[in-house]
Image (cartoon, rainbow, N blue to C red; front, side, top):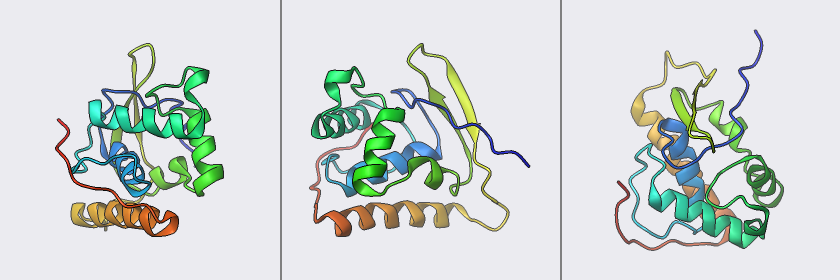
Length: 147
């Protein structure tokens, strides 16, 4: 079976379980300082978190602001060892990845979902956030919800 191509961008408006992977990572490295329910929605708080991450990585000058795209993913993988695409391939479900031109790519993970319950998916996401905090000595504080 061939691998499903992974969408090149995740912009504001994206929805699905793989947005929560990004939210967990951003929380784990301390750039999302709001109390965030991993709500599967790439809204303003998530976009601001990506923008802050990109500023920290020196990527804002390259026009990547707020768009979790390949250059940002590559920097995250190199610096943190966090392979967003590989992790997304282990989280079951379908996400609508909004692209810069506002088109949406529906991407379904090849993960086997028959034995995985929704609580286990949430548990995986919380573990990802905790790993980011413990690996990088970063802590996040509470604030508000993202809608």
